[in-house]
Amino acid sequence: MSTAPVEETVTSENVVYDCLKQIADNNTPLSLTIRESEDNSIYLTRIQSLNPNKQQIVLKQVLPSDWREKITPNCKLVIKSHMDMGNIRFHGVMAALDESENNSYCRLTFPKKIYRMQLRDYYRVSLAKIHSKVTLQIDDETTLTGSCRDISISGAMIALPSSSKDLEIGQNLGLCSISIDDILDLNFTGKVRSLQETDSDRLVGLQFMDLSPAQIKPISSALNKLERINIKH
Image 1 (tube, rainbow, N blue to C red):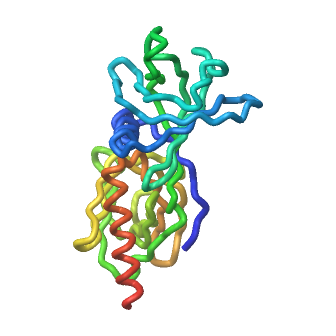
Image 2 (tube, rainbow, N blue to C red):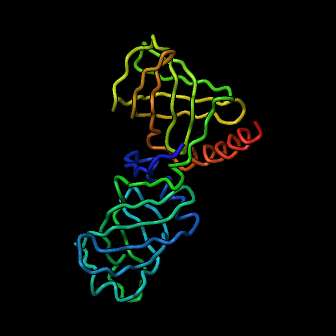
Image 3 (tube, rainbow, N blue to C red):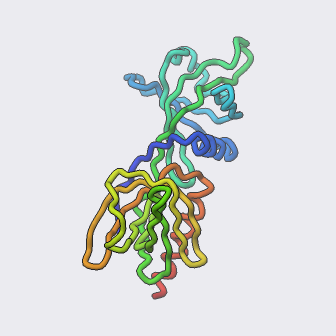
């Protein structure tokens, strides 16, 4: 099953930090452009260190080195980077780390949110022949139990008994879990994106919310394993 990739807004402080830390640990380049400007210049840099307490990212040398001629401390920037599981972008302002002309490091404001586009959002695998269990905690007193019909890197289609408590599109679910044989155990928060009644059950399209890189990696691995199982059968 194919669906168009969706850009996800990530606001969890921990997940934002984890994404930036992965970029820093992998020494992945950042591209910087001036927001809402006719100037299409692209500047490249990498992360030297993260300091969320000071709300700043320390950057290595920015190239081309003439960036000071166009980027002022008040310029709003669009920052983009490629990760293994997708592309991210965020906004910020940048300035030299200090007044020294010999210091090539810069400081960038720490983002409160990032926008993430999963590269494999369209890739969805059926679980029709594979055992799974899903639990959705609706509130302190209500937990729904069902199975997973299919799963992608960004969400899943859940089958619940038709007698289950009603859900609403856009509803946030705080504590959810999916267990797929010995292939995947995932705890997550979710949002209801679609609802469909059938003769036998209720289908709920769930979007995974604020997944950290540590959660995305086992989902990707599980998709590959599930696809191989489906091919064999």
